[in-house]
Length: 228
Image (cartoon, rainbow, N blue to C red; front, side):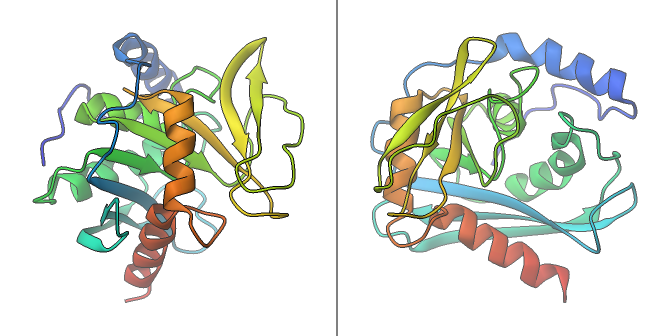
């Protein structure tokens, strides 16, 4: 599939922040399209050791699922090393080069990207899901296991209960309960998506477990490739 080259890979935090600031106006935070996606891709990266520093070995995985059956349509894995240091708010630059390579290896162009990370729930409103959405032009959402920025009230205890995630008086995401009595996930839109549709899709993709199947399958694939 096609992924656009919109910038060079930065080597410093200042360069990375400048890339985020330059690409942010390209975001489309409208309705998730298509309304009923046929294919959905999960993206995840696994690291050797503690994952810190540059030169760390990593594997990036993309798993495309049939949105109706959750069966695997296609998989892509790329191995590499982290060329950018760990900096809060710039974590995407550690993962993007390998994720872009894995996406470009796909024969299938998915209808929606589901990232293990954040969209606009980010200090500069441009997390991994936003970045990948702009580079690919595809609808994208972020589903994170833990919060990064913002405040929220705990959602109700039942599947589907949710509460707003706010930062500086702005709603940047939603804290969503995907399983009764289980810790919620943090959903934020990335590109060409709205929060209501993103949360409905996450619930559809999580019929049995806390995390959506897109994330679970991509995580499993990237971890398996790392130990080969």
